[in-house]
Image 1 (cartoon, one colour):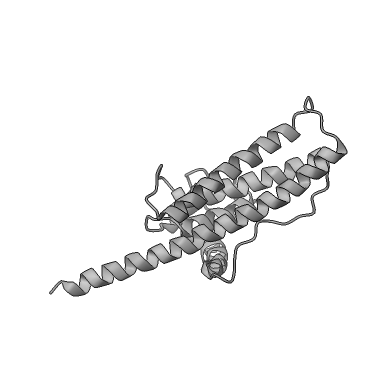
Image 2 (cartoon, one colour):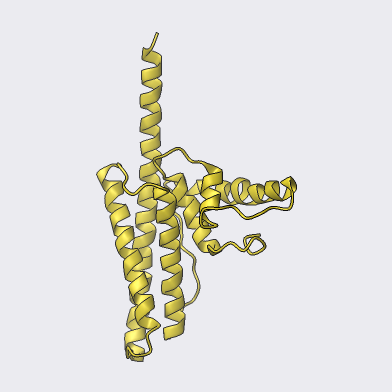
Length: 198
């Protein structure tokens, strides 16, 4: 469906973007979140049925599937594929990780430049931003034919990417859980304030 409407964001990044949007401190606006995956403007639809089909697939389908990751026992896993220790394969993997992390971060931040979140959640977001930069740098290095790399170097890099992927998954999980707790605290505070008004 994303291909049908020429979505510039790949599916793996759409998934992390939606997961990030669930962690946003601002109230979630599904249509705005959807528009972001098309660079801010929804595509043209032939009919209202086409709009409903897209909403059904992405919001009622994918979005609802991702809510399970708000449970402590169901951490989100980044896309897996067997990367060989070659420049091309590792560059593709680094690019995928960059897209996933950018998707998550743009989902969390939305239109905001800064967020006020508890310190542990903020530290996890900082780590994810650093990892995004690292993966992006790896991709650029691997795609540069002027930079030599031996088979041993590439195998070491493959293992390093695996370790960094595990860290990224842990930090994403920490943000998702932190956002859930934050929402619960805000909800409890609003409920308390509402009951205090007579």
